[in-house]
Length: 302
Image (tube, rainbow, N blue to C red; front, side, top):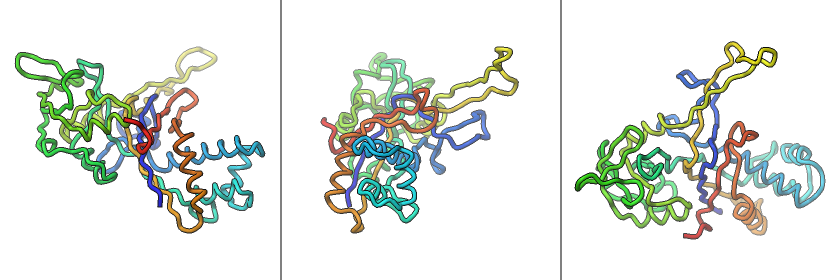
């Protein structure tokens, strides 16, 4: 079994919807049920990877059309090597594939800062869950004792300001007293992802929950009546987006149940690392929404 760990850095606002909402937002984003944290459903990730794989296969074979490949893969009846390999990896109507994709879970959430533009905010629960999911140590004992008005930063140079003999961090309407703690593991992880470690701020679980619920991007849309040039009656709605600079992590596994030879596993792994550098996920991609940078944890240089 081959395991992969990827980080998705949101570049443009991303909307993965769940239909109509019952709150003040008409079209909310997908969230985890127990935590209400923004997340990326595994089906969205796997669907986009499947599409990219088919496009790559078509590009290298030079035969047929994307629609023909898609239909052949769905039915699993085509015996050509390209379609057979695709069926083994992504599955078809005849059976499941070898690729297992897990939901994208949040690791850092961007929040506006009085100093340094914004901070990458996280919390003890998120870091502990990341450790459990990946076996990568990033937490410290100090994190568990954080109070709501406190934050821990890795470095005070970029987002923290000094008043008298005390350090403060102001994020949106929150003012935090600051404790600076060196954390080489979290620092190195941030470097691997490609974000600035000096922007990281660890807040309490309850504050983080409030931030990911309150500081997403909400856009208002209207529909114009072409005959009058004015807004159509009732054609006003709001749409929620995950903001740029949000960081998710995604685990994948390639199960080798005997149907996928080592050479084919190597081929797919090579494709993942070399060709999947960015993806378009969610809705409104034709207007530039949902662009994410894909970082392979095993390959990103520190």
